[in-house]
Amino acid sequence: MEPSNAPKPSQASDAGWSEAERIVARCAFDRAQQRAIRSLVETVQVHSSGLDSVESVWVLHDYLSTQRYAIEGRFDFRLEGLLIVFAGLVRDELLSLDELEGLDAVKLAKIAALSKF
Image (cartoon, rainbow, N blue to C red; front, side, top):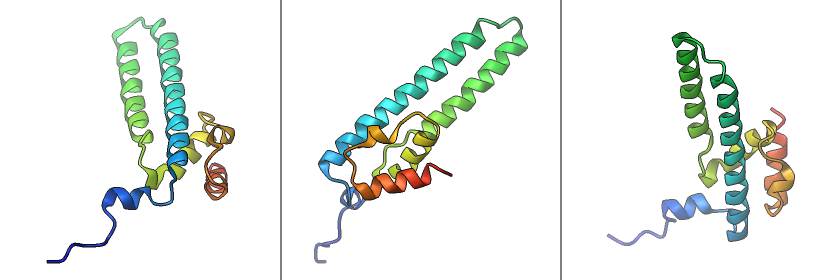
């Protein structure tokens, strides 16, 4: 059997992203993730100060479970889906388009357009 010239999965998923763009993307991604976590912590601090019954504890638990699922699902750094992730982060004001400066103009235009939905 002859060796395949097809790109390996990691090469295919990196196609279209320069090394400089990967660095910009990773920094922006990490910054947005930290903002989301900080917001969650602040919200939990406010709500936990008002816990006065077991029911309120369970409500907080349910909220935390939902947020954990949302954050873990949202913050997935795979280049092939990153434009959609960035668009959602821009839409939700966890990231600005200015923070993505360094990505090529086509990627920025796609993120800007997708962030409107």
